[in-house]
Image (cartoon, rainbow, N blue to C red; front, top):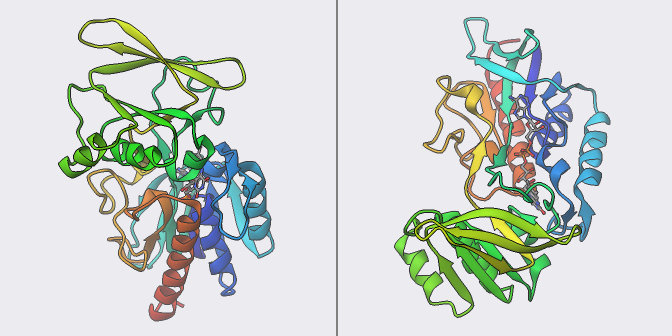
Length: 309
Ligand code: FAD
C-alpha cells in the first residue's frame, strides 16, 4: 500500500507528489493525462518568476520534477471509485482497468474542465482567439475587441475585468436576462465600452484560418443572426469539476466541487484534495500548486498522527 496516493497529474497533483515524496514516504500518482489542463494551454505569463512559458513545456517540467523522486507514476489511468478507509485504515481507489490501489492517505486533484459552446469554429480557434480564462489571457487582447459568452457571475466578472484592458466588450447571454448578482450587473452597465446582448445564441466563431475575426449571434426572439467583428471570445458558461466519480462518497458543493478546509482536508478521514476540483476560490496554476503542497503536508501530518504503522 502507498502512504500517499495522488489522483490527478496536473499542477496540483504534481506539487502534491513532490512534497509527499520529499518526506521519504511511499508515494504514487495516478493520472488520466499527466499535465492536466496545462497541456491545452499555449502562452502562460502568470506563472510567477517565469515571465513566459508554454503549456506543453510546463507539463513536461512538472513530470520531470516528479520523476526526480521515487514516485510510482501511473499515467493514463482513470479513477472510477473511491472507497473510504475500512478497519485496516486503507483508502481504496478503483481504476477503470479494474485494479484497486490502496493507500493510507489519498490526495484528490482531478481538476476541472471548461464547459464549451460546441459551435463551429470554437475548437479550431482555441488558443487563437477563443479563450476560457480572463485572468490568464485577458492581457493578450489589450486594445482589441472581445466578446464574453455567459451572463452569470463568472461572465459578468470577466466582462468587467476585460473592459479595463480591451477596447470593447460584447457580453452575450442566452437567457432573457443576466443571471449575475445585481451589484455586478450595475457595475457592468456603468461601463462605457460594454454592450450587453440578451436572448443571444452564439452559433459560430469565425476566423481567417489563423485567428478569430468574428462571432455570429442569433437573436432568439426575432431569429435574425448578426455578425460581430472582434478578435477574441471568452467562453464563461461554467467550469465543471472532474468529480462525477466521487458523488455519494464525500461532501461536494452544489457545483460539484470537493469541499475542503484550510488544510485541504475533505469530509473523509485520510482523504485530502487540492486544485480546480475543490472549493478553492480562483482556479489558477500557482494556486493549484500551493494547494497541492498544502494537501501533501496535511496528508503527512495525518500519517504521523495515525496509529497505522
Ligand atoms: P488539472 O490541470 O485539471 O489536472 C487534473 C488532472 O487530473 C489531470 O492529470 C487529469 O487527467 C486528471 N484526472 C481527471 N479526472 C481523473 C480521474 N477520474 N482519474 C484520474 N485522473 C483524473 N492558469 C494559469 O495560472 N495561467 C494560465 O495562463 C492559464 N491558462 C489556461 C488556459 C486554458 C486553455 C485552460 C483550460 C486553463 C488555463 N489555466 C491557466 C488554468 C490552469 O490550467 C488550472 O487552474 C490548473 O491546471 C489546475 O490544476 P489542477 O492540478 O487542479 O487540475
